[in-house]
Length: 118
Image 1 (cartoon, rainbow, N blue to C red):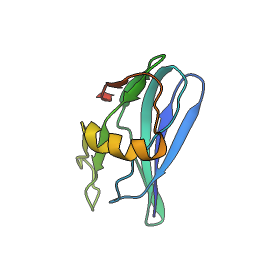
Image 2 (tube, rainbow, N blue to C red; image 1 turned 90 degrees about the horizontal axis):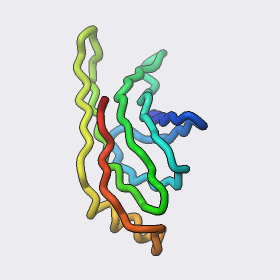
Image 3 (cartoon, helix red, strand yellow; image 1 turned 180 degrees about the vertical axis):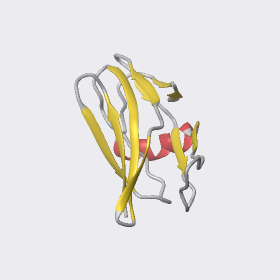
Image 4 (tube, rainbow, N blue to C red; image 1 turned 45 degrees about the vertical axis):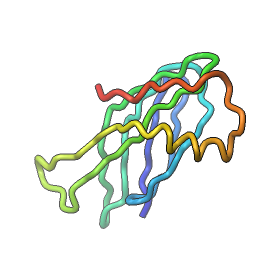
């Protein structure tokens, strides 16, 4: 049972498949602009659950931007008023090792600009 991580920008929507409980490194070449992670959703029983983390980040020209590790924890049983734990952590060193395997040369310097929750 996968989940969808959806990003919005003025020009396009991007959707990434993720598996609950599994960590993945995502590398995506995006046009310069401002982005917002608008929803994280998953199938649950006969329906689906959706959460709006409202994480935002920017892509600037001539640089590679590390936006951080997004962690979302939802309770096993969702009830009215249930809390969702949403965090962004800086694990750039670990991500750079994985990144170097697929992208030996990166465009421009790598700049850390962690996603912000608004």
